[in-house]
Image 1 (cartoon, rainbow, N blue to C red):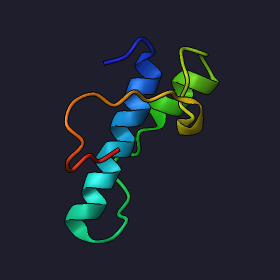
Image 2 (image 1 turned 90 degrees about the vertical axis):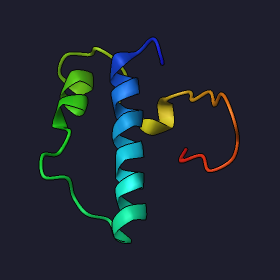
Image 3 (image 1 turned 90 degrees about the horizontal axis):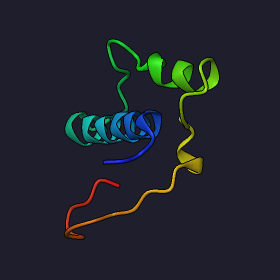
Length: 67
């Protein structure tokens, strides 16, 4: 949940990649890279795609968090 849809997508893509690394045991590229996230940020200025600039607030249980 968030107010910036680009940031939400960027975090989602990061979580998906982390889950794929945990499953496959290696970093595998997605069949279709999520380039729409970067385009939404850099071309259309619709939000933030840089993970270092996204403020992430964790809610819920602390066990087995991916973030």
